[in-house]
Length: 453
Image (tube, rainbow, N blue to C red; front, side, top):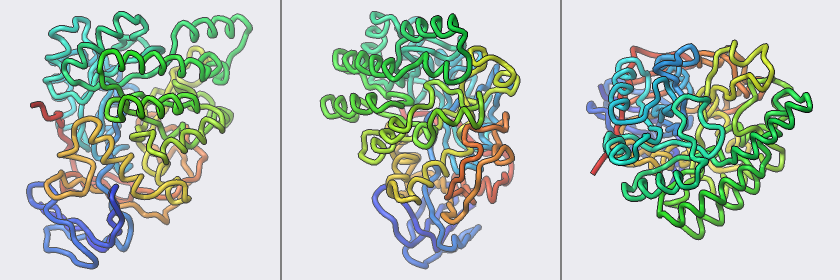
């Protein structure tokens, strides 16, 4: 079926203009329309001068499916995505069993097919045997390998690269494949030592778990990884960067090694919130890496504005209530849903004058698609690309509350935060999948493989 959305303010990374988009019967963008023009189509929608973006791309999503579906699954997580204006989710590999090879990629893609309301890609852990494991896994169409220097994924699918020799072996193998490696910087030795001291002193609470991960651990981890990337030629994406010093180090590294080799992600919660959020939402604000100071938050916004940050990823990390509540902070799981609030958290910054709408289109669409090899399919309003669209009402203001969270836990670190600029319609390949906070129609999402030469 064809779709025409007209009388919109069409927003791309290159500009904002009055017009619309025509999506053909094949689900791809057929034409961009200027001014008040509209075209004949099976479905014609008057945008009433609201903002029209390419469907958002979230490159950091934990859907927990298979194996951990008491936390989230494909239907629940992609419901949150569709209503939240996200038409492509990149799924992290810490499922049970983990996505650790080409066979698990195929199995997980089949699990998501027919159950997902938006399109999805898959990411993989580092295979235990690098050769030929990494080559076969990369050839299966994953968008990245994912790992960490510290904390890892709570024992599921973890290949923590805190052994420098193993780190170099992995990055050398990735460089030979021209594969992307997403990695969380940190230092496990320091975190373990501080955790022991804090627990011995009787400390508890989410502020204590944050103290076990001071800004120093990110800086040390980033410095180590930058030098490893320099030595091996690997292409890295630094996940969840969250400190002023971390952004400073990566700004310098991008200038020296090139932005195409040193990618940078920031999360909405590190852009918008500080550690004070735990006083409001308790352990639902307990996240790894932790929420930081007001100065670190300001540094994150500055890095987003000046281009040090490539894209915003939600780190959608849902947990069941029994894993978060009524426990000591040391026992509680770390993470919070993020798909529901990704778009308004970033759009509210733009509508408040802190960054441009064009930059929103870039960090939520064109940049994640480019970084992870999907630029010819997703993330932009160009003829030939998938007709994934999201219509934003810039006047719609809401205070985040549990009833707005469609993710399985129904809770959010953003509870109580007032945000402006919410999605009111989402289309996937030319078919409306969500409107005014509700799903429309059956699951239509597909597995999207990264094009392999």
